Amino acid sequence: MNISRLPYPLVGIILLALIYNFLNTIFKSDIKRFSHDRLYIDYSSYKKKDVKGKTQGGPITFMPPQMRQEFRQVMEGRVEDAVDSYNSYMAKAFAGRPEDPGPAPRSDPLFEEVMTLARRQPDGIGQARLFFAKGNYAAAVQEYTGILNVIPENDLQNRIQILNSLAECAFYQNRKDGYVENKVKSLQLTSRMLDLLKSVYANTTNDSPLWMPTEEATQNLLKVRVHALQTMKGREKEDAIRRAEFDLEVSRSFQG
Image (spheres, rainbow, N blue to C red):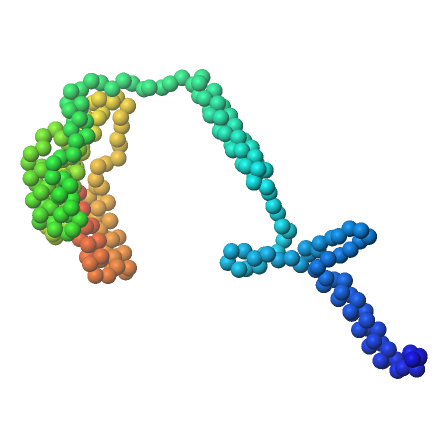
């Protein structure tokens, strides 16, 4: 067969087919390659599957169990050394700093009694809180009032908490007088507690007021009304406005 007699387009097609077959054999072979007497495995197109069945490319990494254990021990040792170095540095940094205990508190039997009573939880307080959480405010008021009648007068901390709880019960019962009365009593006991702290600790200061002034409470009521009417609905809007109104009455009664 004389190739020179064949048409030129046909010869070109045959040459292109041979070149394509040759290149395809070289670049797509992922089985084995031989070079002299050595065997090479081509992982260029190797893909492994993860747990979910998705393919992941990249090289295969493997670490024997013994080497993995030694690597973990080395890393743990480095972390422990770093923590020990940090603790040693901080101990040296603060070793030379003089302590500033401040003025010693003045001995006051009344203050010691108040603090001792504050650490105790009155009997029945858990049941009262349970009634309040369930929305049974009448039963909660009865429980809180009974506790308030039996705890000592100098149990200021528990009295303050109970009075605040009674005020919240009155709020949800829509009783403004009960809310204002219990809030004012709570603020008065809080003021007494702060005076006692100031008498014991000389460096105790408290310049902030216990409750907002009447002018600020009035502005707060106006802001709450505008905000509630624009963004709130139903019970949420009514509660927000009513609380601002009640707080204004507390300001007037407490400052008056």
